[in-house]
Image (cartoon, rainbow, N blue to C red; front, side, top):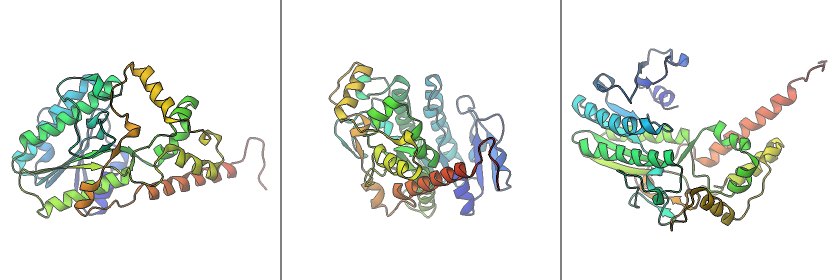
Length: 323
């Protein structure tokens, strides 16, 4: 979506992919595609040469053995290359995972973060690779701060980024997850808003905001959405679709907490993700406002779901004849 939004605004784009094939939909002269393995490629100067800005979204999400190389080392190399090439603005997507399981429920950009250089399991109610992801994304932030000199840096910590299919896809949860987790605050942020924020702050930096070598940090979240729980959307989706997979009961939160206790064999005096709330007050103070917002994103998801249901009703079953 970021590439499409940049093209819509008239920018030329140099894009990267780790896939063996360049995306087929990328057949446009305004996009210069490069195949890059951030875990292995050490010289990134060609990627940034002649660029005014870098929007760095690439990350290793699941393979622990690659996370340090991609999320930390490659981020540092890209920052070095940007500094040497005279890039004006560098926008980086980190993650709210850097906060781990918060000591308080309200989290702002000055809240405590994970220990970045070693795994402290009690800091984060999560499986090993998720803790590793949070630590390496935080270390990636620190790499940018280490190399910041002439380029202006903006670090975003997005919450749970979703597209329309992922909003609808809660129906694919198994029964136990629907019962245990439907009460949770979803922490959703629409991918269209993430893309828009990246470009807005890029343009702001290109217009001269911020000092050379400055590093700004923002949570990218909409936890003040008035209907934030999974079950809030599930009720509306059931009303639109009649799909029984959206039917569930929200059990008391204590059942979810006890499930985590049994799963992780730990009961730290910290809050699991679903109890935390991520402040976006610093983001708002810049004048930025979400282009869509989760209310609009959910409306779009429900409209897509309704179209899906109507298409299914129009599709004839085997043996049926059309008049």
